[in-house]
Length: 88
Image 1: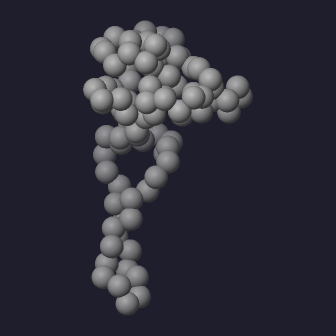
Image 2: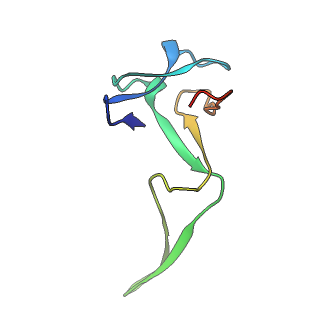
């Protein structure tokens, strides 16, 4: 997750893998505390016929507007990013 205005990324403050740790914007350094996975709360699958090949499933990637998702840290605890209060 990159802020295109300042090229900073979401970062678990201090690299600490524990509940309640703040998430901040920080210079990119590719640490585990800056890696996230988007998990959508629903699933979208599209079946596509490919000539000469069995039917396969294609999953859409990227952020999709108006589709609820969770951000999950790639640190060992796999913690969810949550937002408390009105600080957007």
